[in-house]
Length: 561
Image 1: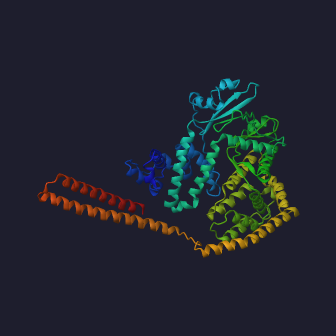
Image 2: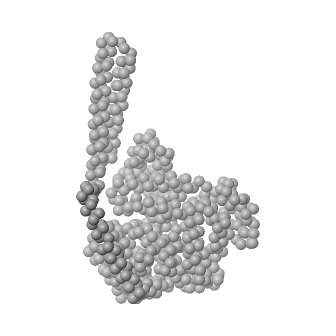
Image 3: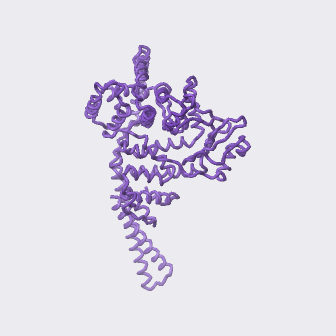
C-alpha cells in the first residue's frame, strides 16, 4: 500500500504526516503501519526518535490534538468529527479533541478577489453599498467578511478559501489509505473502525465544503420554526450564494458564552436555557433534522429574548424509526426500564458480535443506580455518557447521526447549566418523550403498524410461488451457486502468489545465468562474435537485476511479518 503512495504526488505529504507523528512521540505507530519503511525505500530518511521533550510531557490526547493541529485543516476537521464520537472515545479524549480550533491567518483580499468577483459576478464594492476587506473571522475552510446592502441591511459573506478543495482532496485520499493500513496492520486499533470512520468523515467534510447545501439546511430548519417567534435563523441571499460563497443576514446578538453581556442585557438565563432545549427537542423528536454543533459560537441571544442559530454545515438527520428508538432509549433511562434500553442498543448495533447476557447485566446494574432518584436530580448527560461507555466496552459503534445527536445533547446540557446551574435537561425532555411514547402506543399508531405488518406478510406470501419457481429454475439450469468468503484464506493466497512469483523469477534468473555462461564460453572459445558477447553481458545484467529483486522481495516480506 505504501509502495503505491511512494510513486505518486502524495509522497511529500506522507513524509510530512510521518514527521509530525514522530515529533509528538508516535514513532512506534509510524513503524507499525509501515510508513517509515516505505519512505526509506524511496530514499527519504525518517529519524525515528522518542519525540520532542516538550511534546512527551503532554498527555496522549493532548499530543494527538497538537499533531492534528499541525497537520492542517483536513486533520483539524477530522479531530473535530472524532470529538463527536462519544461511542468510540472516552470522555478525556472527547474533551481534548473538542478544544481543536480551526482559526488560521486570514487570506489577503488580493488572493480572494478573483474568486469572489467570479462568484458575485462583479466587484464586491459595486455589488454592495459597502464591503469590508478585513475579515470578521477566519477559519480553516473559509473566512467571513461584513458588507451592507444598498438598503442598509448588514450581511455576512462566508468565502471559501481558494484552492482549499484540492488540498482537502489530497488529504482525504491519504486518510482513506492510512485507515486501510491501520485496520489491517494494527489489530488493537481495529475496534475503532478506522475505515468506516474516515468514510463517514469524507462524506461529512465534502458536504461542509458546499456552502449552498449549508444554506439549504438553514432554510429547511427555518421553515420548521416559521411559526415560532422565539427562534431566529438568518435569511439567505440566494442571488449571491453558491458552492463557494454564502451570503446571509448578519446576526447582531450576544454569544451564548458571554454571561456578563447576557446579564447586562437583562435577559432571563433560565428562560433562554429552556428555549434552547425546546428548540433542539423539536428538531430531534418532531422535525428529524437538527443542528449537530450547537456550541456557544453558533448560538446567539438577541436582546428581545430570541435564540439565533448560525452555521448549518453540520446537521444530523433522524428518521421516524430512529426518532422513536431515541425516545424509547431516553424514556427507559429516565423511568428505569433496563430492558427497553438494552433492546434499543441491540437494535442500533444489529449484526455486531456482542455478549447480550453481559450487556443486559451491565445495563440492569447501571439503571438500578438511578432507582429512587428524583427526576429533577437526574443528569441526562451523565446517563448518556454511561451508555456510550457501555458501548465502548463492548466494542459497539453507533450510526453517525446518533453519535452526533448524543454529542449535541451533551453540549446543550453543558450550555444550559452554564446559563442556569439549576437547568434540568431531563425535565425539559420529559414532555417530548411522553408525547412520543403516547404517539407510539396510540390506537391509530397500533392500527397503522398492524396494517403495515399485515400488508408486508401478504406481499411475502404473494411473491413466494414466483420466488420458489425462480429458485427451482436456477437449480435446473446449473445457475444455483453458493459463495463462501473466508478472509483468512485471502492473505494465505496472496502469500502463495508472492512465493510463486519469486520462484518463477528464480528459474528465469538461473536460466539467464546458464544461457549467458554458454554464450560467453562460446565467445571465449574463439568465435569472437561481438553480438554474442553483448548478448551474454545483457543476460548476466538481467540475471543480476532479477537476483536483486528476489532478495528485496524476501527482505520486504520479512519486514511485513
